[in-house]
Amino acid sequence: MAEQSKNVQEQDINQLLKVRREKLADLQANGKDPFQIVKFDVTHHSQEIKDAFEELEGKSVTIAGRMMSKRVMGKASFCNVQDLQGNIQSYVARDSIGQEFYQDFKKMDIGDIVGITGEVFKTKTGEISIHASAVTLLSKSLQVLPEKFHGLTNTDLRYRQRYVDLIMNQEVKDTFIKRSKIISSIRKYLDGQGFMEVETPMLVANAGGAAARPFETHFNALDEDFKLRISLELYLKRLIVGGMERVYEIGRVFRNEGLDTRHNPEFTLMELYQAFTDYKGMMDLTENLYRHVAQEVLGTTTITYNGVEMDLGKPFERITMLDAVKKYAGVDFNEIHTLEEARAAAKEHHVEFEERHQKGDILSLFFEEFAEEHLIQPTFVMDHPIEISPLTKKKPEDPEYTERFEFFMNGWEMANAYSELNDPIDQRERFKAQEALLAQGDEEANTTDEDFLNALEIGMPPTGGIGFGIDRMVMLLTDSAAIRDVLCFPTMKSLGGSDNGKKAEKPVGKAAEKIDFSKVQIEPLFQDMVDFETFARSDFRAVKVKECSAVPKSKKLLKFILDDGTGVDRVILSGIHDTYEPEELVGKTLIAITNLPPRPMMGIDSCGMIISAVHHEEGVEKLHCLMVDERIPAGAKLY
Image: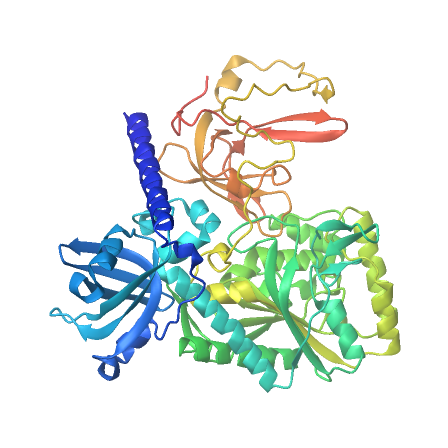
C-alpha cells in the first residue's frame, strides 16, 4: 500500500510540473514570456511598509517577491508575497487590475515571483496590505515548493537545497542575515582599532601555521603541486615583518578532516596580528571584540545557546592549562617531572596516548579529556606546553611552557592566540621537531618554510597574534546547533558521485557490478576451536544508526549513537573514519556485539563493537561495515 501511495504521489507531482510548463508555453505563445523581463523597479520591502504604515497609508508602493499563498474568490482574491524582509498580503481585484490581467493572475502558481504595485491599506481584520493596481509575473516557478519544509525531517535535503530552505524557513534566512552583520561588525571594530584588512594566497607550496592535513592539487601551467591553505598565519606575519603593524584577514581555509557538528573541511577563519604587543594584549582585544559584536548585532552581551546562558559582559575567566587540569582532573603536572611519570598518570586515568607523545602532549590530552567540557562561560586557557605550540614564544621564566592561550565558550575552542615566536633560530629548531613528527606519521605536522624563516631573519618585532573561528562564533550568537546551519552551502557527499571504491547503490537497469577478487589477500582462518557455548554468549544484534560523528582529536574514531531495540541509546566507537564519513552511515542498519564490557576510548565509554569485514588488496587494508537490509528491525538477534 505504501509503495502504491508513493507512486500515486509521484504521478500527481509529475502532472503538476507538466501543467506549469504548459502555462509557461502558453505565456510565451501570447507574448508574455516572464523570462524576457530584465528589471523591475521596487520602492519598498514588506517590513518597511509595516513599520511606516501611518506614513504610507493610501500611498502607492511597489514590491516584488515570491508568491507563497493565493486565495481566489470570484472577482477578488488575496495573495501573500515574501521578500527579503518578510511577507505582506495583497488584495487583487478584477476591477482594479483589469479583466485580462486578473485572468493571468488566477493562472499564477505558488512559488512564482511577482511584482505588485498598489495602495497601502488595512483590512477589516487589521492586517496591513496592498490594494493591487498592477500584478506582474517576473519569473515562472517550474518546480513545486514543499508544503511544509518545517516538518521535513530530511536535514540532508535542506542543506543540499539551501535555496528552498531559505524560502520556506524565515529563521534560516535570519541566521544568514545575522552572519553577515556579525562579520560586518567585526570589520568595523578592527578598522576602528587601526587594523588593516589584507588578502593572502589560498594556493600555497607549503601549508603551515596549524596542525591539520591539507588538501592537495596540481597547477597545470607550472606543472607543480600546490596545497590549499590551512591557516592565514605565515603570510600575515610576513606583512608584520614588512612594517604593516596591524593586519587581519577574514577568509576561507581548508582542512582535510572529517565532518561533524563543529567541523567542515572549508570554513571561515579570521587571523589578526599586532606588532609590539603580546598574548595578554590579544586577550583584551578578544574580550572587547566579542562584547562589541554581541551588543551591536544582538543588542545584549548576554547570549543563550541551547538553553544555557553565557555572559559576555563580565570579565572573562583566565586560567592556566596546568591549573585547569589540576581543577578538573585532580592531577598536578607540577609534580610530574618525567615522560614516564606522565605516561603512568595517563594510564591510571585511562587517557589514551601515542608512543610519540611527550609530557606536554599528555598534559594537553588530560586537558581535552577532563577540562574542556566544563568551560561554558567565556574562559581564556593560558600557557600551553611547548610540544603543542611550534610557533609560540616560550615563557621566559618557564621554557617548558609558552605564551599562548585558547579562548573557550560552551566547551568549544573559539580562538587560539600567541605571543608570536620571532626568533628565527628557535623557529628553525621547532620546524625540525615538526619534520620529525611528520616522519613518524603525524599528517598534521608542519614542514619547514624557508621563505618564512628568511622573513624572520630580516626581523619581526614582538607581536601578538590570534585566530578566530568565525563559524563557531556565528553558531553561538545565532543559537545554531551545527556548523552546517551557519554555512550557506556546507560540504556534502555528491549524490550518485564516485565514492573512491566504496560500494555504491546499483543504478536501476544496470548490470550487476563484476568484482575482481584476484588481488585480494584474506587473513588465514583461525585454527583454534571455540566451543559453541562460549560463542553463543556473544550477543550479535542488528542496530540502526541514529547519529554518527567524528570523535574530536581522533583521526580514526567515529562515535555511533545506535538504536539496539531496547529503547535506550547505545554508544559505540569504531575506528573506521578512514573508510567512511559520518553522514553516509546515518540511517544504515549494521551488526554489533552488544554484551561486551564498556571500554573507555578518548574519554567516551564504548559499549560494544561494530562488525566490519577487512581484507588486504595490493598492500592496502580495505574495510567495509556489515550493512544489512533496512527491513531488519533494531535488536534482531543473529544466530
